Amino acid sequence: MTARRRRFTGMKKYIFCLIVFLVGFGCSKKTTYIGKPTSDSKLSYLTVNYDASEDSTYVANAKAIGLYITNESNNKINNCQFTINDKYKAKLSSILYDYGFVKGNKPLGRNYIKPKESLWFSFSHDCFNHAVFRDEQGNVFPQSQLIDRLQLIASEGKGVWIFQEKKEP
Image (cartoon, rainbow, N blue to C red; front, side, top):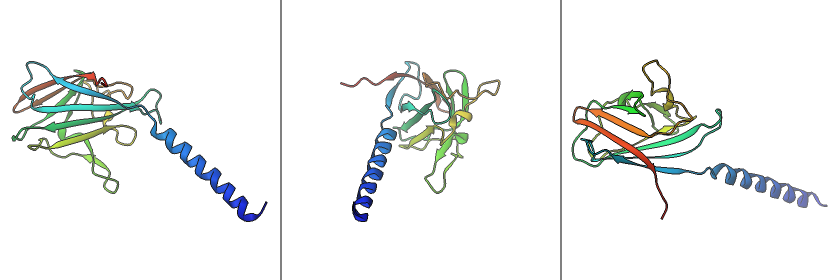
């Protein structure tokens, strides 16, 4: 076998391994959960959903969550505090926000949601918002849990969303 042919064969193996790795890495099943506001919710003009997938990079049974919050109204929502599953609380200003590859994850730094604004918060091994949400004893939101119920208390009122898995048609 010539040196040129050996290099080509070696390159094919390298490309094959790379493709297998990338396909395997990207095949994590993602599930979408739709937030339904409760009947007494004063902030039902907010759209709240999240995607969840396995994130067992460092912890067994961990979940990665991407939480989407969109203010559909023309009004600012002030003094926001969130509660997950009636237990784990955090102020909006302290929730980590992904400012991109260079700036990284930093606390949002403000306690209001702008009119027509969409926010996305990641809960994963890369952006550890699990540690931002804490219960009364200081315990963090477990990485193995999903969000069943999200409450937002703001100056404008209280909103509560119950999450259900999105069913494909």
